[in-house]
Length: 419
Length: 169
Image 1: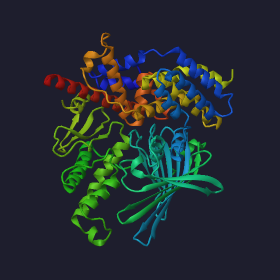
Image 2 (image 1 turned 30 degrees about the vertical axis):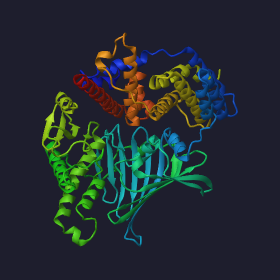
Image 3 (image 1 turned 120 degrees about the vertical axis):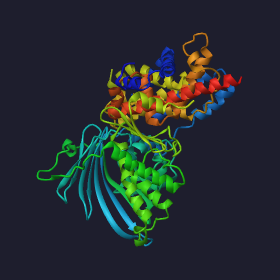
């Protein structure tokens, strides 16, 4: 095994790889019966000349099971019963299967913010989104106060252009595993559970659609609020309309996605990180590692203080979510003058920059790992958060919020499970 | 021979092989392989496929992992992992360990499980895995590293548990 991926694992886990590699080698050496290969080949070849693939599949399924079941009559009865039931995929399952194969897409997203119980509209933002695999996207955001273009990619630097103020910021490559705002689709493609509620059929622009509702936390456990309502095209099983609604600090946020174009041919120019002529470079000065440590330390320390002694129990830090949770923990959910003048509110707002730094690191740094699910303030030897530095070493923040810059070997020993 | 028949001729063995390595049971693997060809054929008819072998490989991995996850296996820990692997006299123990490894893989996040199986079982290069899963090679490396680390940690903790059992015995 000499792939790049393996080489990297070699570097990082020398000495521990033997059991896994030996087991893998054993699995690879298991003989595959030639008659099985022939059965699969004959079955698959017939699909090309059959009118009804499902019937063909059921027929072969019965035949295949039949040969196995000759040994035990009881098992045969059960198997035939199972095999003769045609597999009916739900709308949710069909959509997940189809999303797994989308190449590129574009959509329109409208975000509405409403305040209070009477639903008085506060703000509306319209976003045009374009996505190109493996991980390049462009968001064009327009509202009363903003006219932004945000281009990001996992293989080159991106750009954030502010047309209203005629400036731009350079955005680093997104190498992290935490996804983009469009990661919902990646998660939906991987989701193998059932819908929480079926909504039946309705017509959208003359097309028959099927709808269902999912609890958002099921497709992204770190988003704790709200349900997502999805309407898929009955023919293609791809989404035509998505509505996500959640309550957020006395505000109701509704995000509507429509005008989907799947497998769209997108102009490569859309993803070019070129600033418009005459715009001012507003790229922020990069924080030093010590400054990053300090901001993160302050955010985590305040969270632990508010939560009664633990860090956010999530896999990935979403700055806005954790900040809202901190306000909740502090009893500062209201958006009023009293809250604004509360000293704790100010501390939470200051801590937000540390949370934002963590979110950014998780998006941009492929080695950023947060372990708040298992590491608490008393764990002085356990790694709470770490990321890779440009020189190949790692910045490590421990459970007790002490920090250290370490090399690979030291990181491996730090992260080795305790006996 | 048309395109579909040519693909079937070439891909039947690797697709069944992927399912067999993940599931370890030949009849289940056959079942998954047939489902995968059905699904790919239907997708191809709808014009959704640009890389048929890649899609077949991905579907085989995904569906086999789905099947693996739906199993309820409880493999008892009885022996030291490192000691038993590669010992031809103890096939039963090795089979048990292999089942346990499959169980660990089933517990990985889906993307990591896919990458680990394609990379380790099928020996695809980082770039091939990236192309198959429409990810960047860097993201593949990162996921593979995390997946291997988790599995190795599980194997290590298994080993400690066994040693502890032995000490108590």
